[in-house]
Length: 273
Image 1 (cartoon, rainbow, N blue to C red):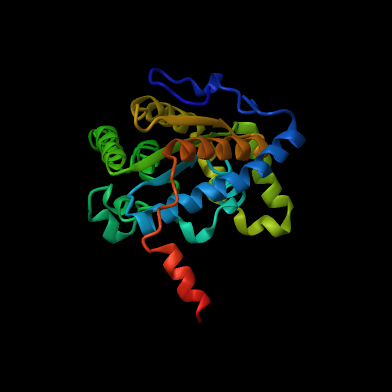
Image 2: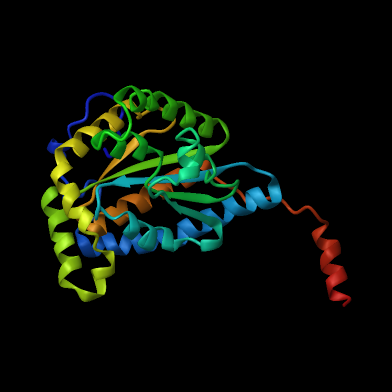
């Protein structure tokens, strides 16, 4: 029920506080999230070992998009934190540098596609080039409107190269964003997270919703669909993404590679030392 299958998208009609398929209330859902941690860790280790010792090219890329305060950093901390950090490659995309602007918009993204056996996480992504550039008229409409097709082809190429792409839109409400920004202002320990520009961007909320609806409609494909995660409840957000990752890793079904040595012989050699 969280996966999009193409067609028009109405974000205003989507409940940002919904808890679809949750195993219960907050306490039960938190417990289930914790229980998934061990299974996720084993699957990650198998994925890594399968590439390192078995030559597999399989990997997973989690794309996180959402309005400011929607929880991209929280997902990295609480969900990705369940994995072994040595098997993760995390990249946060900021405003492009002069060097990056000198190349096609996907150039900088391709530099950070996860290596075989790895779990990659994009905190924002190539979708910024059809979101913020559209809302703020940073490039002509004729430029950004062509990028949807380029993105779809890029993600198809990733799929063909054994990259499982999991795209998540963290859907937060206008009211919840105000609450979280106030929390950053009211708590001295969170002042470092506050950016005055976040308040300025709230004036563009309708334009961002329109831009996201276009992304969700135009860039949902069979090989790289979007998942819309109700994000007003942090505990549900973390559970839903943990569940998504678990389901996709189970579908990849990584296996520990078979030994490349004579195990009995090596055991005898070891006992002789």
